[in-house]
Image (tube, rainbow, N blue to C red):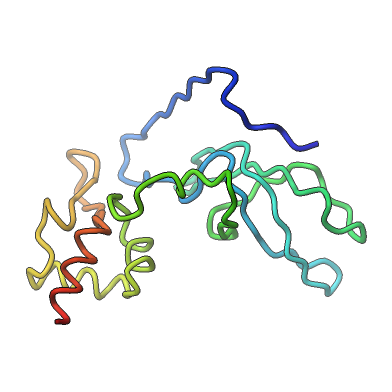
Length: 168
């Protein structure tokens, strides 16, 4: 049974941020459809479902996913599964929250920013160290105050502009 997503009721979400530096933004959002692979008795299946829950545990995001039930009848699956973000990829559809956001005005952590910009994470760090990306404008340290390890985030639109002018 797939849960309906609508705006007819009000919801309040409470997010607690741990004091340790291991917290990162979730890669996926409530209501988004995701895809993952499952190997069952030597067969590889591509499954999809919609995220209905998100929780942070052991320094990684876990997602509760309602399975798209029209999938595969050959294997027994629960209606709802829990997977980590490393196992998932986004399926773009009309319910994807990120399509409603301005993709050029967001701050992303190093791994995701590098992927979006078509660079390696090491290249991003190198450009920052060389002064090609200015701290506070192109990148920022979003770590918890007092932590000793920086948690870099990158402004995608500004980094794209800097990369475009650098190659001209």
